[in-house]
Image (tube, rainbow, N blue to C red; front, side):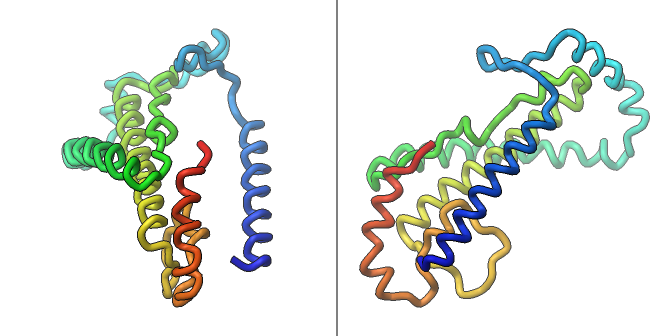
Length: 194
């Protein structure tokens, strides 16, 4: 990679850290004890004022939303199959190729159920979305590390989504870098930090 690209990536990294610090300032104060989120009693009391009871929630829901809910929730079956399949894939292949495994709990975070202002349907919806979107991110990271091992070459055309490992890939058409530095790029996967 060129020095200019390295410098830009470093700037992006610093901006991401700065963004994270600013987002921290907007957080409502809470504690995490034994993986359980808790708020102070005053905050819980205030948040509960915004809880919508089930009858009101259903009454105000678009009937098409209610009718399409089973279609949305039916995807839980292939999602669980994907989750199990990717876990098996990573458990076997990443050991063979000496790729640091992706930590599932870093991606699938199910903490919205602790929010006192959500009713039971909203909590189930949040649980589903947290699982499904976390699963997709988890699978994307496993795929990214696999791609770095086997074919770390950038695409010729612009792509809509660049995963976490893409910036480490070789430029499209750079045969020399691919042949001379592939081993180095593969070894990098064993040293990834959490």
